[in-house]
Image (cartoon, rainbow, N blue to C red; front, side):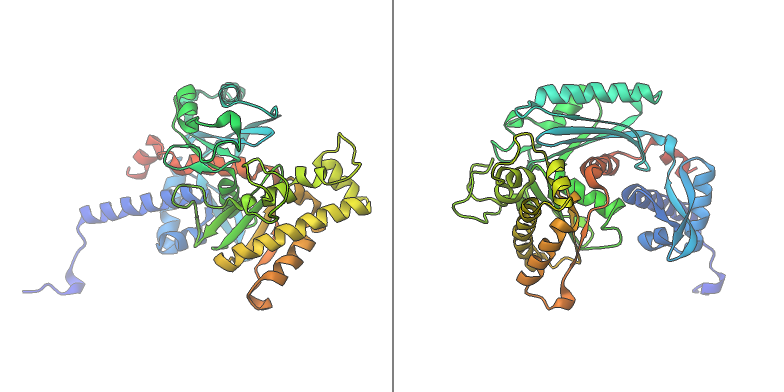
Length: 400
Protein backbone atom coordinates (compact mmCIF):
# COMPACT_ATOMS: atom_id res chain seq x y z
CA UNK A 1 0.00 0.00 0.00
CA UNK A 2 1.31 3.42 -0.95
CA UNK A 3 1.51 5.90 1.92
CA UNK A 4 -0.29 9.19 1.12
CA UNK A 5 2.04 12.09 0.57
CA UNK A 6 0.37 14.02 3.43
CA UNK A 7 1.24 11.19 5.84
CA UNK A 8 4.88 10.86 4.88
CA UNK A 9 7.45 12.08 7.37
CA UNK A 10 10.91 13.25 6.39
CA UNK A 11 13.69 11.07 7.70
CA UNK A 12 15.51 13.03 10.45
CA UNK A 13 18.84 11.85 9.04
CA UNK A 14 17.93 13.12 5.60
CA UNK A 15 16.85 16.48 7.06
CA UNK A 16 20.20 16.80 8.86
CA UNK A 17 22.03 15.98 5.64
CA UNK A 18 19.98 18.52 3.71
CA UNK A 19 20.66 21.21 6.29
CA UNK A 20 24.36 20.42 6.21
CA UNK A 21 24.33 20.65 2.39
CA UNK A 22 22.51 23.99 2.55
CA UNK A 23 25.04 25.35 5.05
CA UNK A 24 27.91 24.22 2.86
CA UNK A 25 26.25 25.82 -0.17
CA UNK A 26 25.87 29.14 1.64
CA UNK A 27 29.46 29.08 2.91
CA UNK A 28 30.79 28.30 -0.57
CA UNK A 29 28.78 31.15 -2.14
CA UNK A 30 29.96 33.69 0.46
CA UNK A 31 33.56 32.50 0.03
CA UNK A 32 33.34 32.70 -3.75
CA UNK A 33 31.73 36.14 -3.97
CA UNK A 34 33.53 37.71 -1.02
CA UNK A 35 30.22 38.94 0.42
CA UNK A 36 26.55 39.05 -0.58
CA UNK A 37 23.32 40.41 0.81
CA UNK A 38 20.91 37.74 2.00
CA UNK A 39 18.72 38.40 -1.07
CA UNK A 40 21.72 37.92 -3.37
CA UNK A 41 22.72 34.84 -1.40
CA UNK A 42 19.29 33.30 -1.98
CA UNK A 43 19.67 33.93 -5.71
CA UNK A 44 23.21 32.53 -5.81
CA UNK A 45 22.34 29.34 -3.94
CA UNK A 46 18.79 28.72 -5.14
CA UNK A 47 17.62 28.45 -1.53
CA UNK A 48 14.56 30.22 -0.17
CA UNK A 49 15.08 33.57 1.61
CA UNK A 50 13.74 32.03 4.82
CA UNK A 51 16.24 29.15 4.67
CA UNK A 52 19.08 31.56 3.96
CA UNK A 53 18.04 33.84 6.82
CA UNK A 54 17.87 30.98 9.32
CA UNK A 55 21.22 29.50 8.36
CA UNK A 56 22.92 32.90 8.28
CA UNK A 57 21.65 33.58 11.82
CA UNK A 58 23.02 30.22 13.04
CA UNK A 59 26.42 30.64 11.38
CA UNK A 60 26.71 34.24 12.58
CA UNK A 61 25.95 33.20 16.15
CA UNK A 62 28.59 30.45 15.94
CA UNK A 63 31.23 32.87 14.64
CA UNK A 64 31.54 31.54 11.09
CA UNK A 65 29.74 34.38 9.27
CA UNK A 66 29.63 38.12 9.88
CA UNK A 67 26.76 40.45 8.91
CA UNK A 68 26.70 44.21 8.44
CA UNK A 69 23.82 46.56 7.51
CA UNK A 70 23.63 47.29 3.77
CA UNK A 71 21.12 48.11 1.05
CA UNK A 72 19.76 46.11 -1.87
CA UNK A 73 17.63 47.76 -4.57
CA UNK A 74 17.13 50.75 -2.29
CA UNK A 75 15.97 48.66 0.66
CA UNK A 76 17.70 47.85 3.91
CA UNK A 77 19.52 44.52 3.86
CA UNK A 78 22.22 42.52 5.61
CA UNK A 79 25.53 41.93 3.86
CA UNK A 80 27.03 38.53 4.69
CA UNK A 81 30.77 37.78 4.75
CA UNK A 82 32.98 35.17 6.33
CA UNK A 83 33.93 36.09 9.88
CA UNK A 84 37.16 38.06 10.14
CA UNK A 85 38.80 35.66 12.56
CA UNK A 86 38.71 32.52 10.38
CA UNK A 87 42.09 33.09 8.77
CA UNK A 88 44.14 35.33 6.49
CA UNK A 89 45.29 35.32 2.87
CA UNK A 90 48.06 37.10 0.98
CA UNK A 91 47.80 38.88 -2.36
CA UNK A 92 50.89 39.83 -4.39
CA UNK A 93 51.02 41.84 -7.61
CA UNK A 94 54.30 42.02 -9.52
CA UNK A 95 54.34 44.53 -12.37
CA UNK A 96 57.23 45.63 -14.58
CA UNK A 97 58.31 48.39 -12.20
CA UNK A 98 56.51 47.88 -8.90
CA UNK A 99 55.25 45.29 -6.43
CA UNK A 100 52.27 45.42 -4.10
CA UNK A 101 51.72 42.96 -1.23
CA UNK A 102 48.48 42.81 0.76
CA UNK A 103 47.34 40.83 3.79
CA UNK A 104 43.57 40.31 3.99
CA UNK A 105 40.95 38.35 5.87
CA UNK A 106 38.47 35.98 4.24
CA UNK A 107 36.02 38.83 3.70
CA UNK A 108 38.69 40.40 1.41
CA UNK A 109 39.25 43.25 3.86
CA UNK A 110 42.85 44.46 3.64
CA UNK A 111 44.47 44.51 7.08
CA UNK A 112 48.01 45.43 5.99
CA UNK A 113 49.72 46.28 2.70
CA UNK A 114 52.99 47.48 1.28
CA UNK A 115 53.95 48.93 -2.10
CA UNK A 116 57.43 49.59 -3.47
CA UNK A 117 59.16 50.24 -6.82
CA UNK A 118 61.20 47.62 -8.68
CA UNK A 119 64.38 48.07 -10.66
CA UNK A 120 64.02 47.79 -14.44
CA UNK A 121 65.92 44.48 -14.49
CA UNK A 122 64.52 42.99 -11.27
CA UNK A 123 64.84 39.24 -10.72
CA UNK A 124 62.35 36.73 -9.38
CA UNK A 125 64.51 35.29 -6.61
CA UNK A 126 65.22 38.69 -5.06
CA UNK A 127 61.64 39.94 -5.29
CA UNK A 128 60.05 36.72 -4.01
CA UNK A 129 62.46 36.81 -1.06
CA UNK A 130 61.45 40.41 -0.40
CA UNK A 131 57.73 39.60 -0.68
CA UNK A 132 58.06 36.65 1.72
CA UNK A 133 59.86 38.80 4.29
CA UNK A 134 57.20 41.50 3.94
CA UNK A 135 54.46 38.95 4.61
CA UNK A 136 56.16 37.91 7.86
CA UNK A 137 56.59 41.56 8.88
CA UNK A 138 52.95 42.39 8.10
CA UNK A 139 51.76 39.38 10.10
CA UNK A 140 53.78 40.63 13.05
CA UNK A 141 52.21 44.08 12.66
CA UNK A 142 48.71 42.62 13.09
CA UNK A 143 49.76 40.17 15.84
CA UNK A 144 49.24 37.11 13.64
CA UNK A 145 51.31 34.08 12.67
CA UNK A 146 52.20 32.44 9.37
CA UNK A 147 50.10 29.42 10.33
CA UNK A 148 47.00 31.62 10.05
CA UNK A 149 47.63 32.25 6.35
CA UNK A 150 45.39 29.92 4.31
CA UNK A 151 46.80 30.78 0.91
CA UNK A 152 48.75 33.16 -1.32
CA UNK A 153 47.57 34.58 -4.64
CA UNK A 154 50.14 36.05 -7.04
CA UNK A 155 49.45 38.24 -10.07
CA UNK A 156 52.20 38.72 -12.66
CA UNK A 157 52.02 41.32 -15.45
CA UNK A 158 52.82 38.72 -18.09
CA UNK A 159 51.04 35.72 -19.66
CA UNK A 160 51.18 32.68 -17.37
CA UNK A 161 51.27 29.11 -18.68
CA UNK A 162 48.63 27.39 -16.56
CA UNK A 163 50.38 24.01 -16.95
CA UNK A 164 53.76 25.08 -15.59
CA UNK A 165 53.03 28.19 -13.51
CA UNK A 166 55.76 29.98 -15.47
CA UNK A 167 55.65 33.02 -17.76
CA UNK A 168 54.41 31.72 -21.09
CA UNK A 169 56.75 33.71 -23.34
CA UNK A 170 60.38 34.38 -22.60
CA UNK A 171 61.59 37.97 -22.66
CA UNK A 172 58.49 39.77 -21.39
CA UNK A 173 59.83 39.79 -17.80
CA UNK A 174 63.34 38.47 -18.30
CA UNK A 175 64.24 38.10 -14.64
CA UNK A 176 61.28 35.76 -14.18
CA UNK A 177 61.80 33.44 -17.17
CA UNK A 178 61.76 29.74 -16.28
CA UNK A 179 60.67 30.34 -12.67
CA UNK A 180 57.77 28.24 -11.26
CA UNK A 181 56.40 31.28 -9.44
CA UNK A 182 53.73 29.80 -7.17
CA UNK A 183 55.92 26.83 -6.28
CA UNK A 184 58.80 29.17 -5.40
CA UNK A 185 56.63 31.30 -3.13
CA UNK A 186 55.13 28.22 -1.53
CA UNK A 187 58.63 26.99 -0.73
CA UNK A 188 59.47 30.29 0.96
CA UNK A 189 56.33 30.61 3.08
CA UNK A 190 55.27 26.97 3.39
CA UNK A 191 51.73 28.04 2.53
CA UNK A 192 49.65 27.09 -0.57
CA UNK A 193 50.23 29.53 -3.44
CA UNK A 194 48.65 30.10 -6.87
CA UNK A 195 49.65 32.40 -9.74
CA UNK A 196 47.73 34.06 -12.57
CA UNK A 197 48.07 36.85 -15.07
CA UNK A 198 47.57 40.23 -13.39
CA UNK A 199 44.99 41.37 -15.96
CA UNK A 200 42.88 38.28 -15.24
CA UNK A 201 43.05 39.10 -11.54
CA UNK A 202 42.21 42.77 -12.09
CA UNK A 203 39.13 41.64 -14.03
CA UNK A 204 38.21 39.21 -11.23
CA UNK A 205 38.51 42.01 -8.67
CA UNK A 206 36.37 44.45 -10.67
CA UNK A 207 33.80 41.66 -11.11
CA UNK A 208 33.70 40.86 -7.39
CA UNK A 209 34.21 44.28 -5.82
CA UNK A 210 34.23 47.03 -8.45
CA UNK A 211 32.81 48.37 -11.70
CA UNK A 212 31.75 44.96 -13.07
CA UNK A 213 29.55 43.94 -10.15
CA UNK A 214 26.24 42.60 -11.42
CA UNK A 215 27.52 42.14 -15.00
CA UNK A 216 28.06 38.75 -16.63
CA UNK A 217 30.09 39.60 -19.75
CA UNK A 218 32.82 42.19 -19.30
CA UNK A 219 36.09 43.29 -20.89
CA UNK A 220 38.54 44.86 -18.41
CA UNK A 221 41.47 46.71 -20.00
CA UNK A 222 44.53 47.78 -18.03
CA UNK A 223 46.57 50.65 -19.52
CA UNK A 224 49.72 51.49 -17.63
CA UNK A 225 53.30 50.29 -17.89
CA UNK A 226 51.92 47.71 -20.30
CA UNK A 227 48.49 46.95 -21.74
CA UNK A 228 46.52 43.86 -20.79
CA UNK A 229 42.95 42.63 -20.75
CA UNK A 230 40.90 40.37 -18.54
CA UNK A 231 37.85 38.66 -20.03
CA UNK A 232 34.73 37.80 -18.03
CA UNK A 233 32.32 35.59 -19.99
CA UNK A 234 29.10 34.39 -18.35
CA UNK A 235 30.47 35.39 -14.96
CA UNK A 236 33.76 33.53 -15.26
CA UNK A 237 37.31 34.63 -16.01
CA UNK A 238 38.42 33.23 -19.38
CA UNK A 239 42.01 32.02 -19.22
CA UNK A 240 42.24 29.97 -22.40
CA UNK A 241 43.80 26.61 -23.18
CA UNK A 242 47.19 27.44 -21.65
CA UNK A 243 46.24 30.40 -19.46
CA UNK A 244 47.35 33.09 -21.90
CA UNK A 245 43.96 34.50 -22.99
CA UNK A 246 43.59 38.28 -22.94
CA UNK A 247 47.06 39.27 -24.19
CA UNK A 248 45.44 42.35 -25.66
CA UNK A 249 48.60 44.46 -25.49
CA UNK A 250 50.35 42.26 -28.00
CA UNK A 251 47.87 42.70 -30.81
CA UNK A 252 49.84 44.19 -33.70
CA UNK A 253 48.33 47.55 -34.64
CA UNK A 254 51.23 49.05 -36.63
CA UNK A 255 53.14 46.62 -38.85
CA UNK A 256 56.30 48.72 -38.89
CA UNK A 257 55.82 50.18 -35.43
CA UNK A 258 58.23 50.33 -32.50
CA UNK A 259 59.83 47.22 -31.05
CA UNK A 260 57.81 45.65 -28.22
CA UNK A 261 59.27 43.89 -25.19
CA UNK A 262 57.78 40.63 -26.55
CA UNK A 263 60.10 40.86 -29.57
CA UNK A 264 57.49 41.82 -32.17
CA UNK A 265 57.01 45.23 -33.75
CA UNK A 266 53.93 47.43 -33.60
CA UNK A 267 52.15 45.80 -30.66
CA UNK A 268 49.42 47.90 -29.05
CA UNK A 269 51.51 48.09 -25.88
CA UNK A 270 54.50 49.47 -27.80
CA UNK A 271 52.29 52.17 -29.34
CA UNK A 272 49.76 53.20 -26.68
CA UNK A 273 50.97 52.22 -23.18
CA UNK A 274 51.97 55.02 -20.80
CA UNK A 275 55.73 54.63 -21.50
CA UNK A 276 55.05 54.57 -25.25
CA UNK A 277 53.02 57.78 -25.05
CA UNK A 278 55.81 59.49 -23.12
CA UNK A 279 58.48 58.20 -25.52
CA UNK A 280 56.49 59.63 -28.42
CA UNK A 281 56.54 63.17 -27.02
CA UNK A 282 59.28 65.15 -28.76
CA UNK A 283 61.39 67.29 -26.41
CA UNK A 284 59.55 66.02 -23.33
CA UNK A 285 61.51 66.30 -20.06
CA UNK A 286 63.69 63.23 -19.46
CA UNK A 287 62.15 62.83 -16.01
CA UNK A 288 58.53 62.91 -17.24
CA UNK A 289 56.39 60.24 -15.53
CA UNK A 290 52.85 59.08 -16.19
CA UNK A 291 51.53 61.25 -13.38
CA UNK A 292 53.28 64.31 -14.87
CA UNK A 293 51.82 63.52 -18.29
CA UNK A 294 48.30 63.39 -16.88
CA UNK A 295 48.72 66.50 -14.74
CA UNK A 296 49.97 68.53 -17.73
CA UNK A 297 47.13 67.25 -19.93
CA UNK A 298 44.54 68.11 -17.28
CA UNK A 299 46.12 71.57 -16.99
CA UNK A 300 45.23 72.09 -20.67
CA UNK A 301 48.60 71.66 -22.41
CA UNK A 302 47.59 70.71 -25.98
CA UNK A 303 50.36 68.29 -26.93
CA UNK A 304 49.85 66.20 -23.79
CA UNK A 305 46.10 66.16 -24.41
CA UNK A 306 46.70 65.03 -28.01
CA UNK A 307 49.14 62.31 -26.95
CA UNK A 308 46.64 60.77 -24.50
CA UNK A 309 43.77 61.12 -26.99
CA UNK A 310 45.80 59.40 -29.73
CA UNK A 311 46.49 56.52 -27.36
CA UNK A 312 42.79 56.33 -26.50
CA UNK A 313 41.76 56.15 -30.14
CA UNK A 314 44.30 53.40 -30.86
CA UNK A 315 43.20 51.34 -27.86
CA UNK A 316 39.52 51.92 -28.73
CA UNK A 317 39.96 50.59 -32.27
CA UNK A 318 41.77 47.52 -30.96
CA UNK A 319 39.13 46.99 -28.25
CA UNK A 320 36.41 47.03 -30.91
CA UNK A 321 37.89 43.85 -32.36
CA UNK A 322 37.56 42.08 -29.01
CA UNK A 323 34.06 43.46 -28.53
CA UNK A 324 33.00 42.19 -31.96
CA UNK A 325 34.19 38.72 -30.90
CA UNK A 326 32.99 38.67 -27.26
CA UNK A 327 29.97 41.02 -27.27
CA UNK A 328 30.53 42.29 -23.69
CA UNK A 329 27.97 44.26 -21.73
CA UNK A 330 30.58 46.61 -20.30
CA UNK A 331 34.16 47.68 -21.05
CA UNK A 332 36.15 48.81 -18.00
CA UNK A 333 39.40 50.73 -18.31
CA UNK A 334 41.93 50.82 -15.48
CA UNK A 335 45.65 51.30 -14.97
CA UNK A 336 47.82 54.37 -14.47
CA UNK A 337 46.87 56.04 -17.75
CA UNK A 338 43.16 55.63 -17.01
CA UNK A 339 43.58 58.27 -14.31
CA UNK A 340 43.36 60.75 -17.16
CA UNK A 341 39.62 60.01 -17.14
CA UNK A 342 37.71 61.29 -20.15
CA UNK A 343 40.91 62.59 -21.77
CA UNK A 344 41.61 58.92 -22.49
CA UNK A 345 38.14 57.37 -22.25
CA UNK A 346 36.36 59.88 -24.50
CA UNK A 347 38.52 59.25 -27.63
CA UNK A 348 38.58 55.56 -26.79
CA UNK A 349 34.78 55.44 -26.59
CA UNK A 350 34.33 57.23 -29.94
CA UNK A 351 36.81 54.93 -31.68
CA UNK A 352 35.17 51.86 -30.16
CA UNK A 353 31.68 52.90 -31.23
CA UNK A 354 32.85 53.73 -34.77
CA UNK A 355 34.41 50.29 -35.28
CA UNK A 356 31.71 48.10 -33.72
CA UNK A 357 29.45 46.00 -35.91
CA UNK A 358 26.50 46.36 -33.54
CA UNK A 359 23.83 49.04 -33.71
CA UNK A 360 24.26 51.89 -31.20
CA UNK A 361 21.73 50.24 -28.86
CA UNK A 362 24.05 47.24 -28.56
CA UNK A 363 27.20 49.21 -27.78
CA UNK A 364 28.77 48.22 -24.45
CA UNK A 365 29.12 51.04 -21.98
CA UNK A 366 32.72 52.09 -21.38
CA UNK A 367 33.59 53.18 -17.84
CA UNK A 368 36.59 53.82 -15.63
CA UNK A 369 37.70 51.08 -13.24
CA UNK A 370 36.78 51.54 -9.59
CA UNK A 371 39.66 49.74 -7.90
CA UNK A 372 42.43 51.74 -9.60
CA UNK A 373 45.95 50.62 -8.62
CA UNK A 374 44.61 48.01 -6.18
CA UNK A 375 42.74 45.95 -8.77
CA UNK A 376 45.38 43.29 -9.45
CA UNK A 377 46.36 42.80 -5.81
CA UNK A 378 42.68 42.59 -4.82
CA UNK A 379 42.28 39.98 -7.55
CA UNK A 380 45.25 38.10 -6.08
CA UNK A 381 43.49 38.21 -2.70
CA UNK A 382 40.32 36.83 -4.34
CA UNK A 383 42.38 34.07 -5.99
CA UNK A 384 43.86 33.12 -2.62
CA UNK A 385 40.39 33.03 -1.04
CA UNK A 386 38.95 30.98 -3.90
CA UNK A 387 41.70 28.37 -3.76
CA UNK A 388 42.00 28.20 0.05
CA UNK A 389 40.20 25.35 1.81
CA UNK A 390 37.42 26.42 4.11
CA UNK A 391 38.95 26.70 7.58
CA UNK A 392 38.44 23.62 9.74
CA UNK A 393 36.66 25.87 12.26
CA UNK A 394 34.07 26.82 9.65
CA UNK A 395 33.55 23.23 8.54
CA UNK A 396 33.06 22.00 12.10
CA UNK A 397 30.69 24.83 13.02
CA UNK A 398 28.72 24.46 9.80
CA UNK A 399 27.78 20.88 10.57
CA UNK A 400 27.41 21.27 14.33
